[in-house]
Image 1 (tube, rainbow, N blue to C red):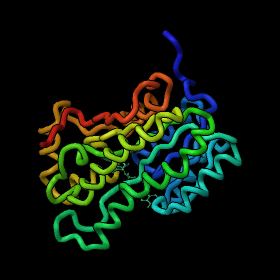
Image 2 (cartoon, rainbow, N blue to C red):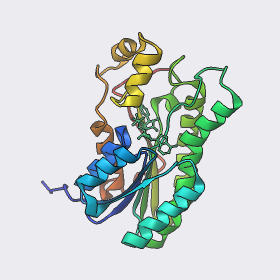
Image 3 (cartoon, rainbow, N blue to C red):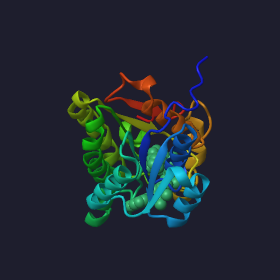
Length: 256
Ligand SMILES: NC(=O)c1ccc[n+]([C@@H]2O[C@H](COP(=O)([O-])OP(=O)(O)OC[C@H]3O[C@@H](n4cnc5c(N)ncnc54)[C@H](O)[C@@H]3O)[C@@H](O)[C@H]2O)c1
């Protein structure tokens, strides 16, 4: 069998929300496969601990990922340091404010900004550099809530709407960028053992954790590494003919 350990060797990746949870697991998996990673997050301490593990192959940028100007500057930084950009993982996301129809205008817009607009801004900034190489990979982190629906009282209506938007954004960007050799795919995780996943499930609705477990065919919350391995596949040449797709990684948790 071919050794695929270094199948992303010397590739350059940007990962947003890389200090913790799924984004961190993806950044670590990319580093493990030989990538150089520009990791960005608003959590400076988390980023630093990531960068400390592979300082020569990591750039850490502490910033708010919802700003288009931050995306443009980060791409510039990756290009000036490493001269290329191969992979973008749009990972930041989460619910801002109330999950229900009582959400304020500000909360609704903030959730869309974090989960959906940020993915557009980073894709817009990254695509020209990938097109210059004739190859690129954009991976958007959506959610089971974007494919099916929100969990009432927890993940939220605005979150679900934004994550559904990510799937439509993925298909449209795949169509627009395919001719330039750039694939665009989404991963829609179900329940993942991160601060966000567990806090939402346990904190907002004490019964939800047990209910999700009972509704999930595989019967467990995934460790972030089980999402990261999908990102590695989508970033690799093994996924060369996959674009516009959504990979559901929900352990069989199909809410309808
Ligand atoms: N955990 C789950 O069960 C689950 C399920 C489905 C989808 N997701 C999605 O996966 C992605 C990652 O979620 P997670 O569970 O790892 O969350 P997390 O809260 O564990 O990590 C999110 C990271 O993003 C950073 N971040 C948040 N807002 C930011 C901003 N404006 N600018 C820069 N950085 C910011 C945080 O500091 C944190 O490091 C999100 O898009 C989330 O919606 C998670």
